[in-house]
Image (cartoon, rainbow, N blue to C red; front, top):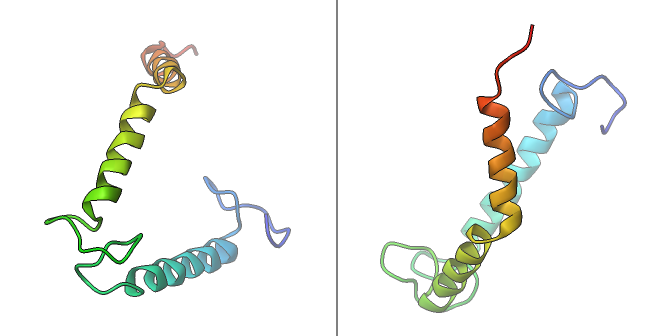
Length: 92
């Protein structure tokens, strides 16, 4: 919590702090997106891969990171626990 007011239902912050946080994040995101010209990689100054916002080198790196995360045992375990919780019958 930022201000000490009770949190909005389903959130961590109060309504006003949620709006402030959303606006701040939007400004930050817009600044980052507008910092590079179209056709230039988000991470470097190389030309982008057609249909993407990354150059070939950064695209390959992101694919490698995603594959490593998807094959991670921690991810598989957390997904298995989540499915158990979803399939678990409700007790009343």
